[in-house]
Structure formats: C-alpha cells, structure tokens
Image (tube, rainbow, N blue to C red; front, side):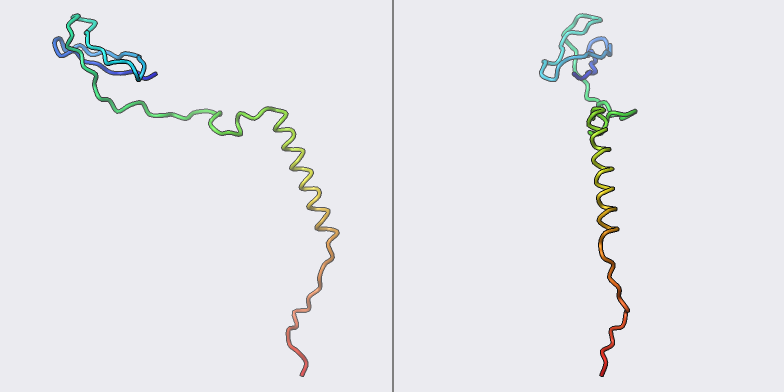
Length: 99
C-alpha cells in the first residue's frame, strides 16, 4: 500500500497517510479537524534494488543448484569425449588441380 501526502487548506498542516490505492482521499485534517484536506501529487517512491534476491536464479533451492551443476559437468564431459573420438580431417590446403 502506498503512502500519500496530504495538506490542510485551512491550517496548512502537512502529513503522510498510509492507505490503500482504492481508498477515497482523506478530507478531514487531523490537526484542526476541518474538512479542508487535499491529497498532494508527489513524485512517488523510487525502487531501490540492494542486495541479492532480484533475479530468478537467486530463489533456486539447493537441490536445484546441485542438479544443475551435475548436469553441466555431465554435458561438459560428454562433449570432451566426442571431440577426442572424432576423426581428424587432414587438409593439405592444395586447391590447385593438376593439368
């Protein structure tokens, strides 16, 4: 829920009110009790991303991370085996045909 800034038109008292977005704006000033309060237009709160927990992978469980490591190491070992068993082609680099 957002925090809204209010100001009283009668006594110029300013305050903040934590209320739902769907709630009607407050009309009564808490200081002078007159119904001259108005909601101020503010810049809003900026988002500050500090620390971890802002990426999907930060919420992975330990078992998921362990399985991913095992899968990665298995795929790396199978790719290195296929590279070593693949026949090497020898190219002479001679593209001239005999005439």
